[in-house]
Image 1: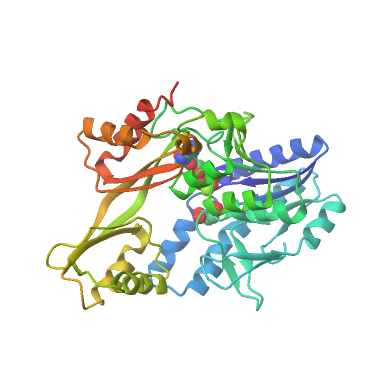
Image 2 (image 1 turned 90 degrees about the horizontal axis):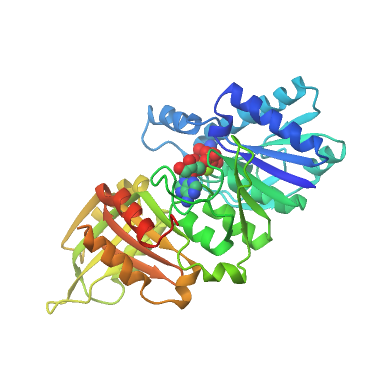
Amino acid sequence: MLIVQKYGGTSVGSLERIENVAFRVIKTKELGNSLVVVVSAMSGETNKLIEYAEHFTSTPAKKEMDMLLSSGERVTAALLAIALQAKGVDAVAMTGRQAGIVTDSVHTYARIEEIDPSPMKSAIESGKVVIVAGFQGITKDGSVTTLGRGGSDLSAVAIAGAIGADQCEIYSDVDGVYTTDPRIEPRAKKLDIISYDEMLEMSSLGAKVLQNRSVELAKKLKVKLYAKSSFSDNAGTLIAEESENMESVLVSGVVLDRNQARVTLRGVSDKPGIAAQIFTKLADCLINVDMIIQNSATSDGETILGFTVPQSELQNAKTVMENFDHDIKDMDFDEKICKVSVVGVGMKSHSGIAAKAFSIMAQNGINIQMIATSEIKISMIVNEKYGELAVRTLHEAYELDK
Ligand code: ADP
Ligand code: ASP
Ligand code: MG
């Protein structure tokens, strides 16, 4: 088989762990497989590099940030290749550029536009193990880009698609996708299989185990995707097309996203075009708005408009809103919130699931600040101090531990 394996930060977090990965790669190769291995930076490395830049300014140029951040992955790719060579394995390390990964020019959040698989393919054909630095690519005019946090997962899936790999395995410190983050609820159960759509929803709602864009691309390219642990030989979780027996599952998981902040605008003039102006300004500043609610207008023609943004973008959102000097009377910002979501394809055909979630919150005295629903999810914004309690009680209420 032709396999792409991706090892995340914890899996390559020390020299011993890089050696452990080398042994795993050798084992896979000895079973007769060809391999491309995508690596992340050592755990904590990307954050450390960001702190270095922020020592000088809180707004470093994104182009230089990409140059800086892409270095973390290059270190691990080189070290893993060296570790393999030291064990007599023919391995070659490649940067994103050397692996033929071309992106658009949205620095720090670039999209992969195309991959020229020939450098990787010819190395594989000559019997080499190819090690690729994840999370990075290059624009058509030669600038280094990165793909957004957690982006090595995306590198792996895109490479798997480009070289026609039989499967793509994402290795982290958990042995698969669980019904909720096992660090929050130790009784969480590992799922053997989950549909692309449910996984995409869980990832987009904040389950870190797979990056959301990687799941989206895996679905599009029909890449057979596994989440596995680099610390065990357990089977992991397969992410695949929805099948009939999956549909009987009502709720498949509960997700907590701590990285949310709420913006509330009061006394907003109730007239056409205001929402368009506000959200266009935010979009122009590349601020990702997530949940949005608007009340119906009061008799004096005013509404309340609330929305959430990632915590890292709250400062920017504040600046944008404070410069919006008309049609809003008052605003406040709250970082002490989190988003709790319940996900399941079975919700499509069952009613009462949302009502149950709201009852559980009420029984536990947890006030719900915002609600958003779709066919296969319910999300609630609550005070951050209730996030873990909400996850555990919802997990129990939907019997996910059974
Ligand atoms: P890596 O650094 O290898 O990319 P991540 O830290 O990004 O790994 O992802 C693994 C983490 O995802 C786990 O340590 C776990 O705490 C978290 N996680 C969140 N939700 C889930 C879930 N539903 N199932 C498994 N892990 C989850
Ligand atoms: N090192 C990058 C990050 O920490 C990319 C990754 O690990 O996937 O976000
Ligand atoms: Mg990750």
